[in-house]
Image (cartoon, rainbow, N blue to C red; front, side, top):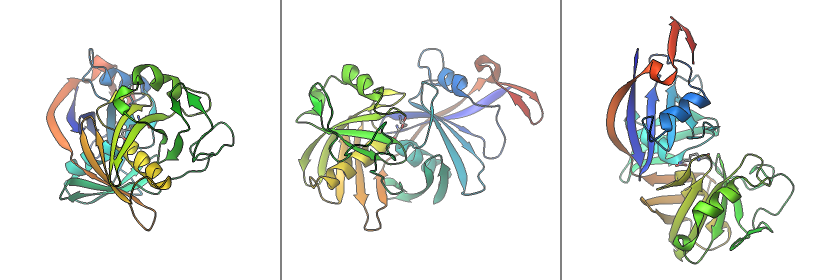
Length: 280
Ligand SMILES: N[C@@H](CCC[C@H](N)C(=O)O)C(=O)O
């Protein structure tokens, strides 16, 4: 049995998309997700995205990091599946229901409302999330924001001077973040401009992170560093983030379909045991 996939990206943050909205797929678990995401022995991607039917929205989007962890939100992938859907869509995720629609800048997504309470990030114990009293070498006093998934944002002079390969995993896996954390290092360059790099939970350094751009923009707005609409420039390119008066974050930016292909299901331990029964 062969399974079709669509390779997509948002500013170079790349995805393998499996579309099971019309036809069920064999069970996708952590091991399968990790194998498919492997850039040497699999197809290769920053996140595996599985689309399924939903009783609460137009469809459900499941998000897997290359380490196999299934997570709540993926901003760039939400734009990608919005492009795939081709019309306005309500998308169910573990982080809530999001709305994606075609826009002048590509795809615009309502990413929900940010959360700031220590329990909502989450943190392991009570703490001021506006300026956490913690430091990891030169990275100090982050602001913590949950935008469906957890982010720690450090404002620095030059994000490209930070050794993210060393400090990223140290912070990602610190016990103060019981569900781990996405690590953002950002410089505010104007009232409407931020430069950002992201070490992603379960994925490492990526060329772009949509939820990172949202969390960083909100963090900068909360600290009074930028206005309520800002361009966040990542290594892969820019995203526009607005924080609406109703507290909803709106992210706008490009999404791209790279190519389509298929793979042999049993090459990744996926077999269709019998009609309707699946094993992985
Ligand atoms: N690249 C995504 C974020 C994917 C999930 C993240 N690594 C997490 O574990 O929370 C984005 O564009 O937001």
